[in-house]
Amino acid sequence: MDDSRYKLVDSLYGPGTVGAWLLTLCAVSISWTFNKSSRHKDTISVDFVAALLLPLIAAGHLVFLLIRLPVSLAEIITARAVELQQYESAIEAPLNICETFSVVALFWAILCGPWWHNIMKLKRLGLVVITGLFSWAMENVMFAMATMKGINARETTLSRPYLFLVTTIVASTWACLVICVLVSSLTWVISSINARRAQNKEGRQDTADEKRTEWIMSIAHLKASKKESNNLTQEAIDHMNAQLERATQTSDRHSEIRFRSLEMMTFVGLFFAPLSAILSLISTFDSFSAMRKNSSALYSGRFLLIPQSDVSMSNLDQIAALVGGVIVLLAAIRSAYHSKEDNKSASPSITRRQSI
Image (cartoon, rainbow, N blue to C red; front, side, top):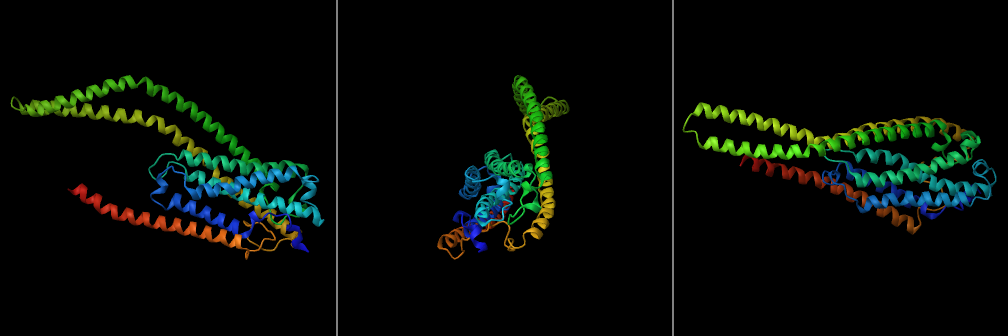
């Protein structure tokens, strides 16, 4: 029976569990984009942690399976014997999760940028980058153990195409990563130099603050003593106001130096993320066509993001997991909707305060 090839697939990768995880990914994305309250905060929510757990577990499980293979990986993914195909299906399940999150991590990394008039969400970005690198590392391990051995998509008996079979994707990803590291390093050096300059100018800033205080007191004194000469006093006030405005603008420019480098690193570094995702999708279509022609009996037309297994959706644990994912998604949608309503109700009160 063809279903016997999925005998070793763990129930953790069943349709209900993976479906709940995909719904959780959608919930986190909604919270980071449409929720006007949480998208401004660099907080770690429970649904975000739950979304990171499955790819981390899948990456560790995949390493464990690769170590315990009875034969080489190249033989496993090209085998026609059902006994070896069972190992192949067991490997595909965690690899599917890792590959899905590798693409999602690019989108989430962009959302952690300084958008919506806010600063970088460094806590979120750090967790996304760490988990994304672990997930993408599994693709590179598969690439080293299979693709570099001369295995191509037409020779495999995999149930769906994977990115590690396309050399251009792996190579372009490493090229983009190297470019981002170089840009980040250069930006860090520039930021350090600017920070030192800013520290050297702190003494000057203190002096400027003292001068501004003296000017403000002098202006107040001149306004209080307009008895002698109104014209002369008004000219002195205008002159001091101009000096005060120039000093304030200089102070604002110095305070923005430390944030410019970080913003430049974000814009330049994340520029390659959408490009890599587009290249991945285009290149995958070719591999998908080749694998579908070669192994049409194995391909069942099932949703590609859910690993194939013998686990039935009618199992109680799968139903419970899927219901939990639906609840998390509905809660995220509800929270995003109420954040918009709260923002609308807060706007008139702010307007009334300003008018008062």
